[in-house]
Image 1 (cartoon, rainbow, N blue to C red):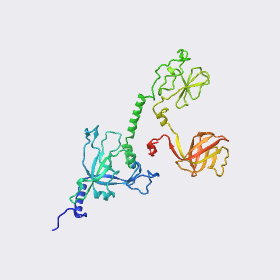
Image 2: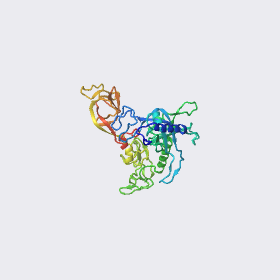
Image 3: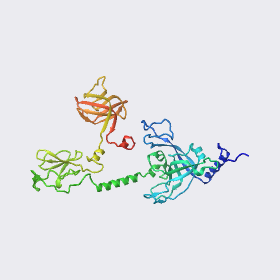
Image 4: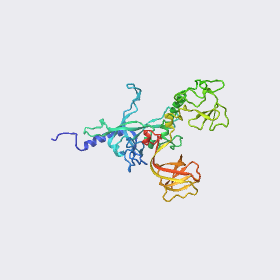
Length: 450
């Protein structure tokens, strides 16, 4: 008599019997779950070593090889329906940790393994999104929500379920760990496509992301924090405006009734470009044609604004307004100069040329310049256009701003300064432009940082 054994090296009839019974249990007692299948990262436009441009979509592809992230994800436009069983739980407060936590946000859902593979072509994996229609919220606290919203969860982990092993020792069930989906960059492909009917005509007119997003609330919170911070700390540095400054004449105390002090209390970030002792001051972008000795004038065309005092023959600088508003930050502190720094570093010089401004202009045959038009102040070069190129333009030894455009495949440079015949206009084209104001994240090229 042969030895009895439920284990077989191959899946036999016993395995099929158990598998059919388990599938039937899910059909009878399970709940429908809509599966949004993750196809892989959306790598269109990737051109660097850290962000390759894959030829084929695959869930195994990695968008950012440096951070090992898939920030832009692509999902199947078709939705698959599977039956699932999971344990309902209450949102209880967990007071055993250092803080207050809700323990019901994470759920563990079980699917029949073979039914799952037959339906979606593979096992459910990290990145797949689940839509639970039976958890629709028909009675939200927010009356502004125009429709009953389904609950969406994203898969965080997946493995074989312990209870899914039959006596034949083969697995039949697949267990996934899911957490609530939030409006973030990873799921834009789903949230922007799903439309909710908000006007009652049966047609979807509002993206689901607009209803699930907390962006407006977060912006309102941020604005309130900034408003309170600006009220508590109105400007950088220290306020010394309430300190009286005695006038000095020839090193001795002067007559406070007939003279105004030429200086104020000095300290770290105390200059606010206001006259001492609350004296009167005029402001503008140019000095007045007439003034009396001791008059103050605030020049608004300086950044930061600069206070001057008239000594009878000339306007002498008193101080700069380094105590400017904290936000957006026009101070010359390290923080202010960093925030307002729009300069860039140029590397890898590719071409150089100098033009003696004339109308018309005929460039030499071996010059880098293809043509120059004085009326538009535009130089068309022989360098092929690339969006990553930069250029420095100089006229009569002074740097001037410029804009770069694509003209018939070649780089063209347009300057904004006035040009006259006989001026010497130089330009240098660089292969790499790096902003001086950049953090580590900017150097690694995120899409939202500048």
